Image 1: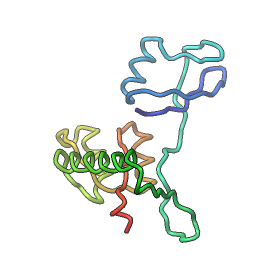
Image 2: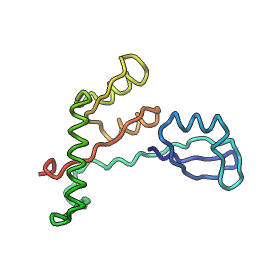
Image 3: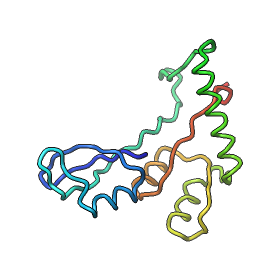
Length: 146
């Protein structure tokens, strides 16, 4: 799922969730995307910043932490993240720091379509999203933070 910041011809700003970029385009073309304030069908995506955490260079910045060792639901959540990461590793190519370049080449059909994962900077991820390249951050596991 992806959330887009939208604006209508009357400058009403709102947001909405879509399965992907293509779903937004399809729904807009079918007249299903309308302004909740004035019902205008002339709706466009606004430039938006992706929800990707900033690089943690500053030790004084607080980081989100979780301590729930005795909570079975949290143990299940971490195990599901572990399984998801394993499935990604088994079904996608690790392209490392070339992620943005590879994702862009696949998106623009310069290379054959395939599943990939790797690392991208905040600016690289933002640029990919602005170009309509579908990317998703992978959650980190507790052992990766040690």
